Length: 219
Image 1 (spheres, rainbow, N blue to C red):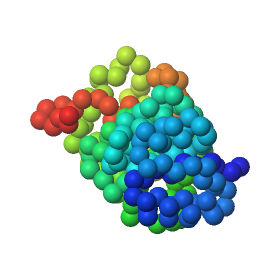
Image 2 (cartoon, rainbow, N blue to C red; image 1 turned 30 degrees about the vertical axis):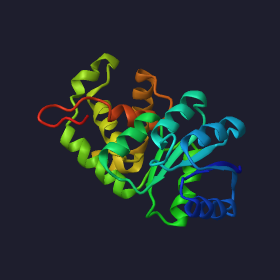
Image 3 (cartoon, rainbow, N blue to C red; image 1 turned 90 degrees about the vertical axis):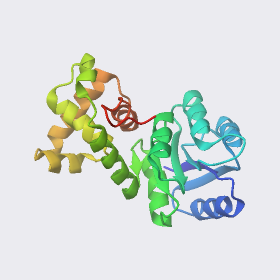
Image 4 (cartoon, rainbow, N blue to C red; image 1 turned 135 degrees about the vertical axis):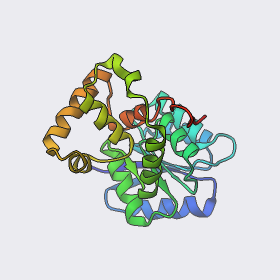
């Protein structure tokens, strides 16, 4: 399978370098580039790529707003953020807008290529430093799981949803909870069915969406 890709960055040198680097990678074809979010939305409308590699801080329309528009119009297109920003607000805004991946520009070529391929497969892609931030944020929030009882999640399902929100993958969840990976998959399938989640990215966004208990509240 060849992954079609749109590269979005307002810096010409970065955009062109990424486009050349990724277009020669095995199994990836760059079908368009864009200099801002508005151009990105138009490019996706024209080409319907598998993945968009999206900068955040751009003129005309920023990456978060562009991601939201792209996901609203073409839910099947995956957006991977590649930015120099790694603050909590930027990370959460991008994930809540629909991004299925978040990398910082410190990522090397191999990590960016792998992120594009992983996102195309419908999986969440988070840089290690982003995972650490999400873990810290999740622990500070201690999200009030009783607020999601309307879905009828079991205690274990709530626990696993929280770990998904921290960015952990199935093997890591299994290790953390000292259960088998097959058991983790069963719980995830059950909570997805109860909540109507269609992807792991959606579960991550939901796990981070509950309001924080006092005294920690993020706006």
